[in-house]
Image: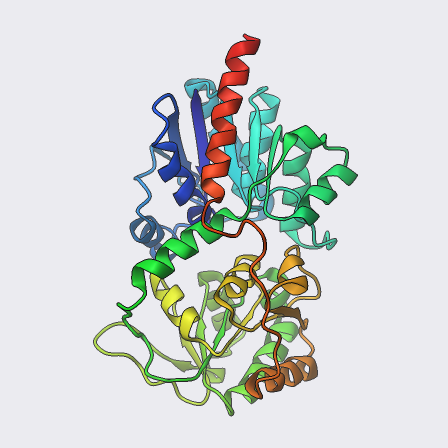
Length: 378
């Protein structure tokens, strides 16, 4: 069976790595890895392939940046040619980025079955491009791999047959557990501080709105007087910082060059970090502020308090069972909950079912069974 696996952005790399590795155990699977090039910055792309030991992509589309319509359209036009040329039996897409959406639509229109890893997650907020991507991808998929029971319920409400839904767990946690165990006891500290907070921001609703972005930074700056804050900024976030002339709100730091940096009691800005470097600093953080879905999940498994700077989440299990809380961009709520964490009054949280490092095994087993079933039908 020929399978095309699609990646395009950081979250995709983290999720595809264990699936690629597990697929090697099945000799009758011909895997083609296609990288759309949605993330093209070295730390957002190449470094992740190096850190996660992902084979060099068989095909690189080199799409690059653009508006949602421009980027998705370019992905679709390029990926259609690949599908016509390679004639895959199935296309595997992961997550909710534009690469996921574009490649799933192309595959469905060419009557190629689509398997969606991380299907069924819903925030209820259609102002987020990722929510549209999730809904449309699931509307054209044939196989649905879910991370939690809530995702199963969402799919069933939308009319998906139960026998197409596979509760396999969280494949991103497979990568996290492997990396965590590999670096345990062999840490390369990037910062000297015993206590600090970690901040990530990249959602358009937070960084594309100047007023909202400055309000968040003002609140985090107040918190940084109590505990230093490390802010590894996404390339598009850095662009907005320059555009809004916010440089004076941060202290620039360059970790990992010669020796660990000592964070000042301020918001300490760096460029994006590789997967392993980011895991190092996240593991040691006292708390994490984020608008990233994946980091909500990672902090839950690591047992680190997480404050999500959004008004909703598609990862509700991290709130109901994990260490995450939704605080939006309300400064008083951010400060209040930070104080609870610093005072040791935060919930412990539990690791959700099947977030055990074995999700890729379950996924590839289903794909192999699909191959057998397809052969029987033919």
